[in-house]
Image (cartoon, rainbow, N blue to C red; front, side, top):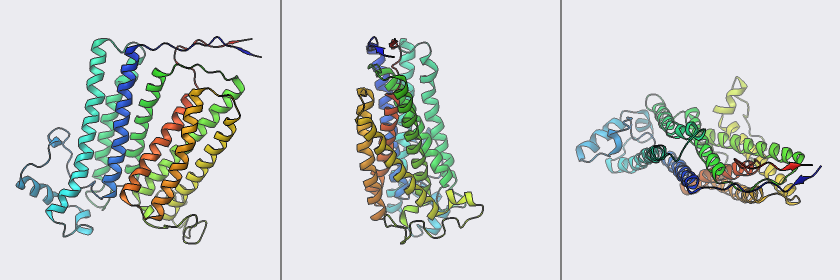
Length: 361
């Protein structure tokens, strides 16, 4: 069986490109939001604003009295009493800045997600089946904001930090929205048709889906590692306190609680998933090198291999240096970029929208 070369590139209009660039701009803002959120967490700034005021909270305290009031509210929560007791107002302003920047950037994302969409709808740039998929964008961004407050709320009454469950959910929803935007934008901009026979295409797709799943699971494990501050312990590699599997790996009962609440287990699982993901990417990249694959697959796959190497180096360095803020924030950004490459590799294995199918003989 052969495939005749009848597939043709899909023509894209200026309207298509404008919508795609809007989606990409929103996705880039979400990527920066993940980085800002990481710095906010690493500097223990996330609980400095104890109220959720989506509209009136846009402005920071503008007077000394307002700053004093905000500081007094922070002094009522467990984090201040048990960790930051004795903090000065000037020091409070320092941590307030990161949480305020995080929330302000979230509001800006909401505006960028909503205002251009309304203009596109009024101008008729978005029509037909695309409408519900794009109208969902500002609603997803709003949901992320609500989940962010739900996360913060978990650290205001009893705990001295936010729930690792809610933190991971907040992170992964951001990644899901980011991936949603990138996928649709790539769908709009993609022109090159596929030139793979059915058997190879099915195999490549299965592998690409598996790698995307592994990257996602590794990020989830990273979220729990961050939420439990597990990176501040076992700061050796490849062994953990001289052992392959750390002592106390399954010390909690029932056993499944260890996956989410045991520092030793959470960090070991994150390491294991990261190594497994790297090996899977390496194997896929080596296998694909000998194949004739289209540019829509080759370019993101090469970038995936490169990002996997960088991300492993960042992860090990972050661990050995006991989680310095700049390095840890870069590692978090690297995870999203690795996810992007895995997503685009999978996307490259689908036909462009509106592409004419190859004729099989």
